Length: 137
Image 1 (cartoon, rainbow, N blue to C red):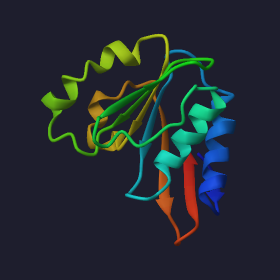
Image 2: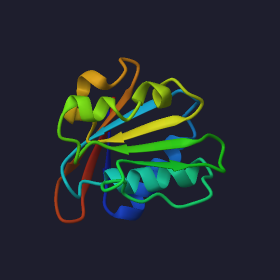
Image 3: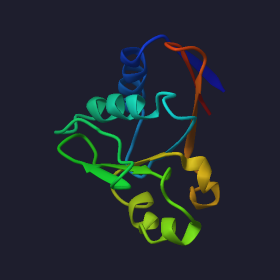
Image 4: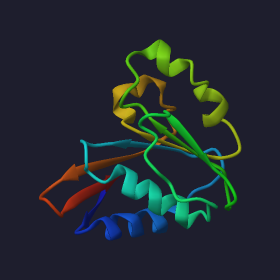
């Protein structure tokens, strides 16, 4: 597992932009890590790297944001406020996971059994006020 040390939100976003170079239709990217660990900053970089027409924002209150206009559609989920498995299943995850875009799930570790086996996991860890460790499997 490769670990990247980010020293700022901009570096975390840049990591996401570089990661976008290796993303293809049907990819599922599962993100784990505590509050403020850089997950949304990574997604902002990823969506920019894929050329999305709008900047990514946290989907905490809407559960999913869809971004289009770039190389691939991006489906950005946040499992933080989802209370139980049936609630997560009602999102119609398979339609997204096996569709024509890229699915990115923040807090994926809340319901790991719903994440496809082929998913690429990225763990975010807060090391200090400014430093984050980002481990991609």
